[in-house]
Length: 91
Image (cartoon, rainbow, N blue to C red; front, side, top):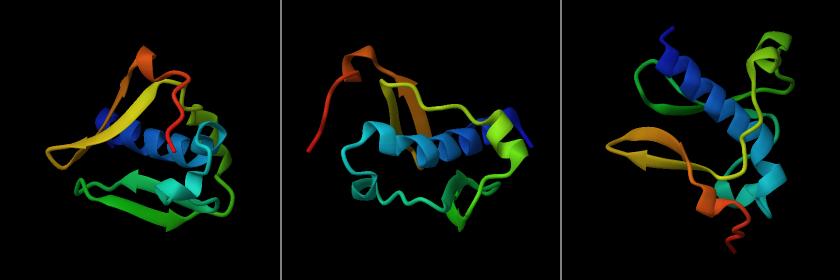
């Protein structure tokens, strides 16, 4: 598995596990507890049921830091840090 793929999977897992802490309502993003969101080997965004993350996944998972921006560009999931986004609440 490539580093890019691992990063994308980690970002998806971190987003699904940590986004509720920063979003007023994670369901607005379509995120739900008990689901994993990831980029598959084909590059397609996927989701799968995940009741409890495995110890291996949790050991590698990182909380998404405030100011992280996720966006789609040319069909690819991208993430970047933008200090100006820290503290912004969207409604």
